[in-house]
Image (cartoon, rainbow, N blue to C red):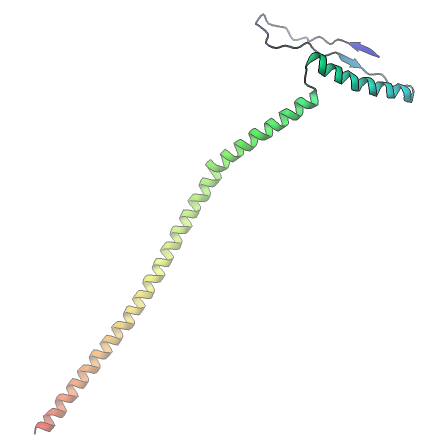
Length: 149
């Protein structure tokens, strides 16, 4: 097994470097010739990663990806909730108010129509009673004149 130290080609500035850990070594993999070689490589890889974690204090790539994924998911959910409250919920509230006002207008108009209908019926009964009273009064006046003679 050969190990090669991979150096970065990025030029380093003269600015102060913060918490820079040394680059981990890059392992050149070769194809195993026997099952024992394969087993040896698997065990070596396992302990290499454990050693790398202990010595360099670096975070493994899979751990970093997992952390970044969950961090992105968390912040996306926060943004989505904010977007929902400012955009969608506002639209739904305006729509609900519009429909509620429409419902109030319709129910008010329906109640007013019922009131007018009842008033017309009551007015008709009153006029009918008044007319009937007038007819009776005329009848009584006519009959009284017969009785008086």
